[in-house]
Amino acid sequence: MAKVAIQGEPGSYSEETALRALGEGILIVPLRTLEEVFQSLARGDVDGAVIPVENSRAGTVVGALELLAEYPFPVLGEWELPVHHCLLALPGERLEAIHTVYSHPQALAQCRQFLTQLNVRQEPWYDTAGSARFIAERRLEGVAAVASRHAASLYGLEVLAENIEDAPDNVTRFYFLGLPPKATRTRGGGRTVFVFSTPDEPGALVRCLLPFAKAGINLMKLESRPNRRAPFSYTFYGVVTQTRSHPACAEALNEVARTATFFRILGSYEV
Image (cartoon, rainbow, N blue to C red):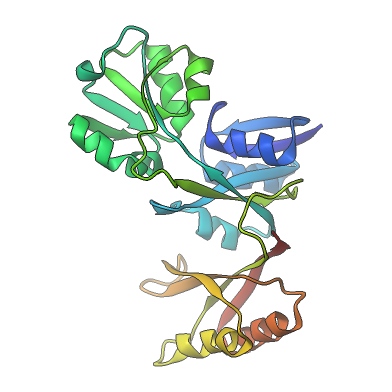
């Protein structure tokens, strides 16, 4: 039975994604942080990992891109999970009595409008399901969690409100490391994920991006992140809608590699 690491507790959206995409015949290994997930994979404690990388509304998951660049594990596939949040509390609690809400910062951001109207204190927690477990174990009154309906059933909580996300098309993208998904749930086509740095001079970024335009390849994502090794320098993360096996894409990637001061392909796969 394959061991698969996730960040979060049973009942988390990462667990749901792993089970849907890899099948029920896996052993979920819940860990507290994304760093622990990568470390576990590096030690060989697990066979694969499922990590969230970005949300359609709240953006990139903090730390995910940096860890992908730091560790040598290729991205083998992705999965897009529609996320519908619930507000969970101890049995018997009333919505108007809630004064504090715990959840992962991404989940809190995805439910900003609802929580603002509720006029509650928002407390970041390491995981959605973990916040539900925390409330259940501590028997916290007047406190709620933003998590899944499944988490409510696992930890004996009641659903005070459901579908509280700001947008009905709330979707989180997950990457698969070590084990590819048996099925996909994306928009079709191919993906190549890469990371690069440019010379600190005018036009350097444009020169790295032009090869994709010339090849007619769509650059669907480009994001800069601080470079951990050099203050006030930046690393760029890109995703194009084609695999590196496509000749035009391969040539464009090679041209970027020749222009950039640092370049690495993080993954290339069919979706």
